[in-house]
Length: 264
Length: 156
Image 1 (tube, rainbow over the protein chains, first blue to last red):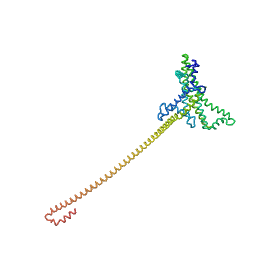
Image 2: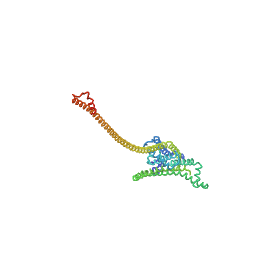
Image 3: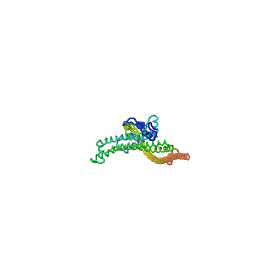
Image 4: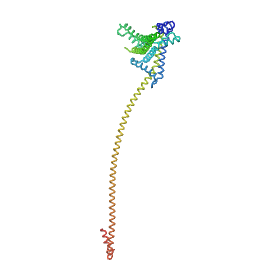
């Protein structure tokens, strides 16, 4: 599976699987594969839900509509439980995050060599199919959430309220303002970073383990058999992980935005 | 951990997706769900109301049945009373009629008897006169003695 310039060694194999298809230099590098799969999956999600929404009947729903409505209701009830304000953005945001992140994570379920091999056959040297194993993708989601946190904090409490929140807590004394500011800023910044790194770490590790298991197929038959068993086990366990990570990302987004709406 | 322009691209995509979801995906789905919830709630309310209506109707039917039975009993009772009354009236009428007929009978008999008595009396008088004529044929003047005979006839 090694591309041009990489020896067919375990290191090379792993390295190849963890390299993005990219164009550009320095900061202006674009990870084509991550963007392609994430945007593709996002469009698929929106197209599917939109087509169901357009045809949605208020009578007896079809199976697909039931499925879509189950997800929507699940997200809606999660939002209603946690977020008590009135904001039309939160629920669609949570739905987008949950389904989109789940779909991107789900690419992890596709055997690690299928799409890269196809791509290689088509002349594309690198192909990293799980967008959420790309730190850029997870961070851009987290930054989007962070921007909303700051935006709503300022919108609800005003600039002075937001500044006060950053400087007058947890110690309500003027002399403690620098300490407060440091603590609160770290708290604020930690939100998007933890969101992004949690998702990235889980999925990156999961993908790496799939790659390591896939390495075993290259060895003798005993290791291959073990590899099949391990892959199946990890796959089943990973279904839980990807769902959980999508859910956690959504839930924390709701919680953070709920906190942004609360006046202390 | 190499950050690059992918971050920007993905952020833009994220914002567009959220906006699209908020604008075109969430509202129709939520509307459909809420509409259905309302319809189900309405349906359940209707079912409840129908059950109540049914109970009411059953109670009403029972009441009406009871009323009807009571009315029927009353009518039967009245009819019985009326029957007794009619029978009594008929009896009284029949009695009166019988008495009248009997009275008439008596009267007729009495009249007949009187007539017959009169006839007899006349016949007896005639016979007596004839007898007396026969006895007195030779000696007695019919015209001279007729006043005596008339007196006798009147005495009879």
